[in-house]
Length: 379
Figure 1 (cartoon, one colour):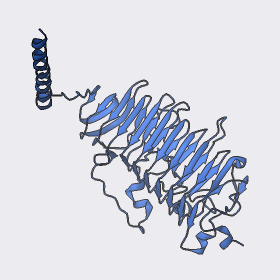
Figure 2 (tube, rainbow, N blue to C red):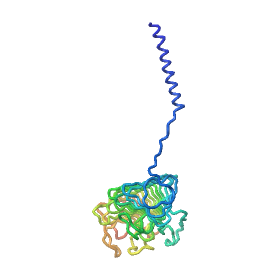
Figure 3 (cartoon, one colour):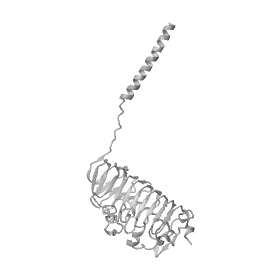
Figure 4 (cartoon, rainbow, N blue to C red):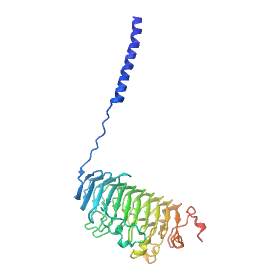
């Protein structure tokens, strides 16, 4: 028995190894792992759209907006990569629900006008530039809109006058912001997007209430008569950073409380603001003179932090309103006790602009961390 047991045990061990080897090689060569099935909720059929809509705009599909689009409360519209939304007239997206537009760098989402050329001659009269023609309206969130998300999305030629307003903060006959957000309890996230053209709907992005994150976007030609690339007000809280803002009509960034019980508290950092404030001076209406437009502005009890921004050839530098009157215009002061700023870089290629790095009659104080060091050129 003893010898038999010893002779059997190696055989059992070899058999076990053989079974394991067969199992390993069969799994490694023949295993078929099925791919997860992507379920599309309420697919929106490509082609003409208008009226009440919900669901998913399908990847790399084309849609033509032929009337105002309405998203009901509780519903969500989703735009997959490569979706192209072409506006056939001065129409809007009115959101009582939510929106997610998430493209990719290689396959972005587009809200634009089909075949519309861009005229980027610096000497062109803005009144003849289609960037300021308001060829369609904008994307308007209501007080019931819980979230709006834009990533890798192009928004072009917006800003037209609204016909029949359907969301909080819009009005009949008023100019449209490209994106308008108004829910004090909501959140809007805009990252890696492109904005081209607008008129005077407040800004390319207007956040009147709620929390926001605006990062790594490019803004070009924001406003012709008196508007900003970004405007926050009425107690919004968030971050605006790493953006490039070129040729804004008034300010690149404006924070203004608007007299509500809520207070803005915004961090503005690492933005580049180029050639801001000139069209407001040349084409604006009342209050276009003096330090009314330029780069970054805090007023009407707004507070925040402003650091590490690059301000290049703007009519005025960082503007912190600390007086109730400027050149005959009534201004409401910022929360100057809670404004923090420094490490901002100012550049100008003319003495007139350099003299406004720290705008006269406003409260902005030179900081030793600024570049160039104020002590090297200020009296």
